Image (cartoon, rainbow, N blue to C red; front, side, top):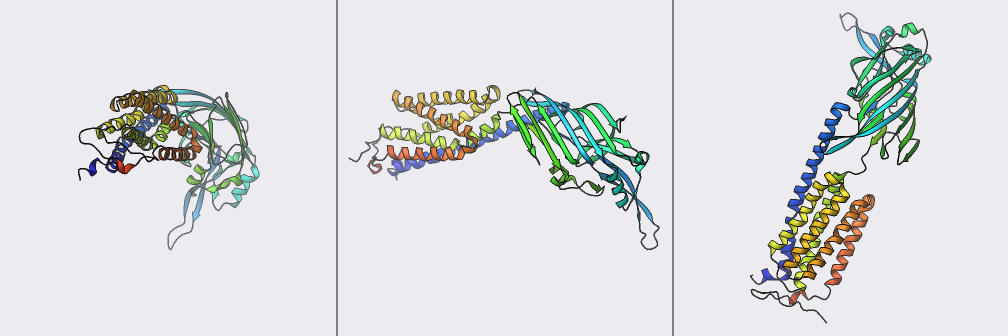
Length: 448
């Protein structure tokens, strides 16, 4: 039994167990990355708290209060039930010009914007008359109102213009919500319009953090948007028909019809359209080009693989140099390799991912290479192992940068590594490994 524990098989199994034990610090590092991500999200929330969060902006919705006569049951007297009906504009046009800057909270930063919005909407008189005739309730046209949904009212900095049929008007606050978003409202007297259409012109400045989305609240919705931000992400239910992106910023144009969404031009107030409205949003996310936490997560996914490869290289030096390396020394090497991910995370928050990766990889390669030179009693072996680590970290960086091709590149690198190990050990007779008491291992015999 004692002889078996000193065999190559026992040694390899022991190294495998040590490599698996190194998953414990790797899991801890992943938890640390998640914790730092949450801290960043909290910092962004703090920025949004005083500036405005992710913004959603719709077109004006015409809402008319109604009274419906309910049929009596038994001896009960007839009664009236209050409700409302909503209708959307025939045409809706939005022109959005955004100014963008980066705001910091501690070591974290987020893009914030101020959007100067010009909105034009038109409600056709024949649509209003048609919905009024088709309703089974009595419209109270004198108490109608236009509601404008805004994702975060804290970001509504200024209403520069509000005109209804050429006449100036003012928004009022409201407890009503549309699709889960708060509204600002303006009263409209449909009875006084005497069959006229409703033309609405709105100018406003809307501040927000991270991104701006629109609601297609028109039979025909046209949106143009531009901003000096070179890394836009077009998100939501529709992509722009036209877009232009360069180093100075982007511009985009959307055109949507009522046929492109899952709700109509008119609905009763009782209809639950929140999910449908939220699913119809579209717009721009102001992405930050370097997400250090996502890259740290991707680097950590290959942690166990590269620790195992380093142990294998260390073991090959051990048997080829006929030396004995204690399991504690393997653990120290593994600890240095695991520390790489902590150093990478800490530095990447300060100096960026690329520079942090170079510094952390160079430090770990030097430490492990120097330690190997002392343990294996050969400066050349330490230099070689440090160089191998440098190549390994270069390959890992290539996998991180490959993004969509990371799996393919990783599979090919793994296949090439296994093939190289098989080639280097093809002549070793593992059965000839006979340890000597208290000294270096016996010679590893090679077949002629």
